[in-house]
Amino acid sequence: MFRVSFKAAVLGLIAAPIWASDLPYAEPEFPTHDPALIELGQLLFYDPVLSGSKTVSCATCHHPKHATGDGVSLGLGDGGVGLGPDRVVDAKNIPEQRIPRNASPLFNLGAREFTVFFHDGRLEEDANRPSGIRTPLGSEMEMGFASALSAQSMFPVLSPDEMAGHYAENDVAQAVRQGLLTGQGGAWNILSERVSAIPEYRARFDMIIGDRGIGFTDISDALAAFLDFEWRGVASPFDLYLRNGTEMEPAAMRGMALFYGKADCTSCHSGRFQTDHDFHAIAMPQIGPGKAARFEDHARDTGRMRVTGDPADAYAFRTPPLRNVVYTAPYGHSGAYATLEGVIRHHLDPVTSLRSYDPSQAVMPGFDADDLRVMGDTAEINAIAAANSLAPQSLSDEEVSDLIAFMGALTDPQSVRGALGIPASVPSGLPIDR
Image (cartoon, rainbow, N blue to C red; front, side, top):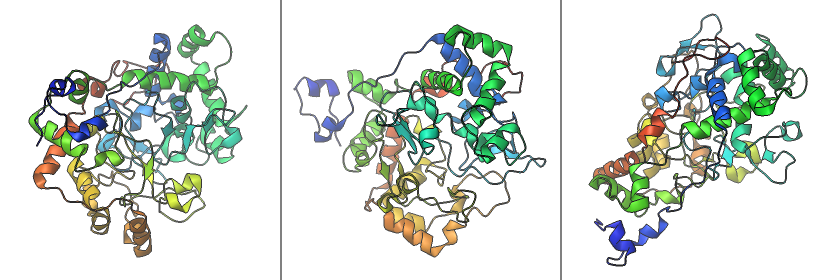
């Protein structure tokens, strides 16, 4: 195993390992923001006012207590009470289903390289579109976003299972059910008017946009500025190694050699944040309700193919970045694995792992649903297996342990804590998830 000093290698005193040329030395690029916009975004992120029934905030599913996720495989949004693994069904407002995909972590999403969002990439930058953004809404999408990160926040507020609510239980849910999203009376407009009617929010927006009407793009731009500022993770032991050759712990150094060498993790997890921003089918077990329209009766999730319509994209999902990954369990688009070791071992032989999947590896809040519907469907399991793009490989237990040690060295403790933290209160006066 290599024991070469980075500094000695770059000085030409000792030959660097061949894989060292694959290390992502380039520094990430981030935008700058008005501090007033960041502080406004912080308040909006934790304020339930942006949900239809005013009970769910962005932080409900992306909480710092759970490393910007919710600590469960598939969460409960509208109709849930509590936070993270302790969240339970509200008996007075029972959810229709679980949120069909795992809540992705939020670290470094403001970096300019992040131009594709959601597990299936259904929102991405596209210079050929009038809005500069490609989304399922096409021409109905609002205009004037500061970034794709801003645009992605427009969608959870429309989801009945996440924030909007179900059927006609509130004005936002009713607008969504009627297909009224943009313009006067649309869901985004209703939420914008809610925010504008709160004096403190109106005053804070006045300092940024003047006295014109508040549009939802203004709200989403504030949220994006906060997300970018709050959870930048660029001071991990790995970053320090890249910048000045400060060696990590021996196990992490061995794990890095594996990650960039024998284990070939960088075939997908490349770049400074360990993602190629592309889509790969790796036979990940499918649990929960699947990704389907309300009129569809299946529970499968075909991933990228739902966006492109191309059968070659079936069961492919976006490569997740790995910063702070030891804190962001469960893993996979459906949160199928509760441990980092579990998901690493899945990568070693995806098809065998799929066919022998033990559902006790998931973390599911109590809810009366058939979460294993797909896993009991032989035809569907065969289809997921057939799409797999990873060849089996063998690593020893010690090598798996070293990989985990390297992934631990991708942790920036300050970014896990967050820069501003949870506000004492929000302008709406609604309770905050803590």
